[in-house]
Image 1 (cartoon, one colour):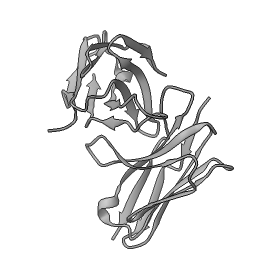
Image 2 (cartoon, each protein chain N blue to C red; image 1 turned 180 degrees about the vertical axis):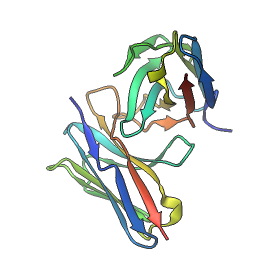
Image 3 (cartoon, chains in turn blue, red; image 1 turned 30 degrees about the vertical axis):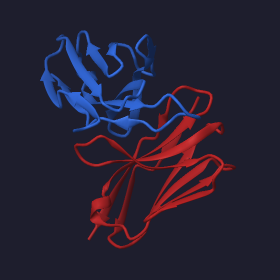
Length: 115
Length: 111
């Protein structure tokens, strides 16, 4: 089983709809992240959470919200989807202990298309 | 702010060496990372180097770090078709909270 699982893997929806992307992990990591990937732009951070009670905005949080339901679960919501939110979305986790920022471990992504 | 730059494309012939280059801006980065993304998959951690090292070798992979020039490179020896992927460089600022990823270099391996 994958250590970081994202659901759904693919989603097509219409402008204005509310969408939730889910992420769960079995790595026991305290830190979780949501990124979006667009061609030629690399990964851009949307939100991150260092523990259940900690939620922080990333570089491009407008139009998105998150919920950290448990240490192992971190969901991303688009309250009213718009076409320029069409992208590949990744969840990642990392271990908050140790020196410096530990490697991030990624799910396989959710491909989201908004018509 | 932090910024990581990479060329977007690289083509090599099977059996040749590939060198993917990256420049970063934050001199306080503790670790520098290389990730590989295959089609339809997430990013897989390939290797990383601690900032007090100049070189790290792991089988076919060699990472070189020039801290003075803030330049990181990934060399893949004897490149195979299975190495075709997008390679991301990432820096991890010591004082900051998050990784900064480059735009990715798409490596194409020609037969």
